[in-house]
Length: 134
Image 1 (cartoon, rainbow, N blue to C red):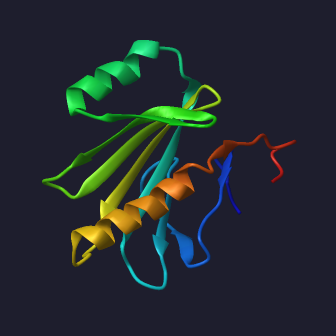
Image 2: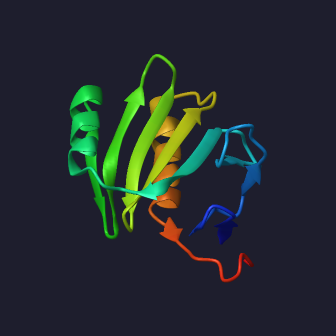
């Protein structure tokens, strides 16, 4: 289990690891065995307040609605850039997630990698540190 300093935890596959990124309050991950792309997760600092926000984003980006047990949100991709985006609400906190696709040879490999990324994102849970100790 990966525990973020930004008050969340998630399960990573055995071959995935965190790497340092310059993006503020963002954790970044990749497959260390075979580079398939970069996953970035940025939790927002505030409670999610606007129920129309995701619907507006869904319409604007032709996104798919997500409902995974305790996680609601949307997912869409930018075909020109090869980036997939998820806006996920976990216990009223909005997580901004993106996966920049690596050099995968075919559609089946891309679909399989996206299934792995989604399986990671489905495990996001908010956590609270006691006295800032994790």
